[in-house]
Image (cartoon, rainbow, N blue to C red):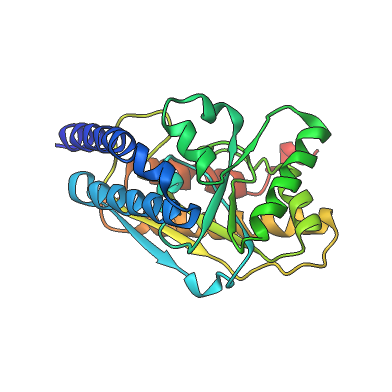
Length: 267
């Protein structure tokens, strides 16, 4: 049953996305940017419903009151493809920081350009960081919420944190609040795997980190805030009814990491 439900969802997800890209291509190009984002948010809601109906994956959003009105940075944990569409509906006028290579995907890349997504050149060093900040300033001026995954790519729930400096550079340059987002999507929609496990994915928008910290303190605060909350959501998922095997595996892994070192390890 799990295999069949995963197959049904994956087919529906990719077919629906392809059809929307094709059917909406011309109207999308003629839309105002805000209307185009509303179209993308509708796509996100459709994908959330498909995941619920076909794969048994529900979404619970907590702390939405922590999202400030107007421009802000939304710094989210990134464990699966789920958050790339499910973070669209809760935000009023979002834009995502994306790798530049996504612009090469037919139609989809065009959508990301016309909707004002922020493309970054990986491995571009300081020049890429400067370009990122300048583009971010343009979108903040439109009172948009900039969604960035501080670790740069999807990481398994058991992977050690790897927060990059780009989000700290944006924090120092844009002078807007940063909303940390913890989640547990990786235990239900694991990266690079076919199966989709039923359960409830939780997105938790945490209290904003206000401007004024130095870059190092900010990055440490962001990492500690997101990682501790995500670990709590992971434990919650593992303790619930019919937990996915990935949730149990990840919780056991975290428990092993937290065990005190034995006598031989400290000699």
